[in-house]
Length: 77
Image (cartoon, rainbow, N blue to C red; front, side, top):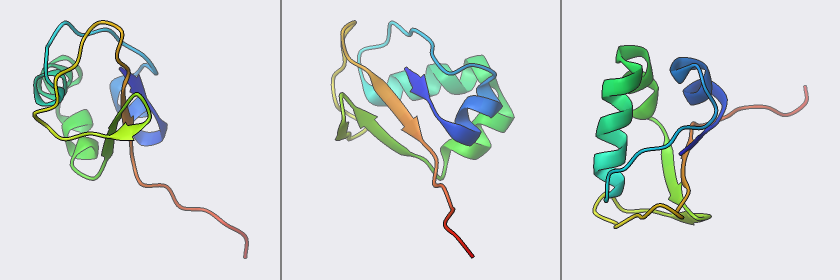
């Protein structure tokens, strides 16, 4: 799993490894591992697997990368 921006901050890490077999199971395991602040951020995140948008029931294996991407803002004023 790769975590970006506020998801990384809430988890306290940018990468981790999970043995679960679906996207939903990986996310539940991550919420259990990282706690409430991560769960709060996760609700607004997009989830991608290997660079493509992922459904919760998508199967994942040891070589797949699940990415948690929070919304970001920016630009110039």
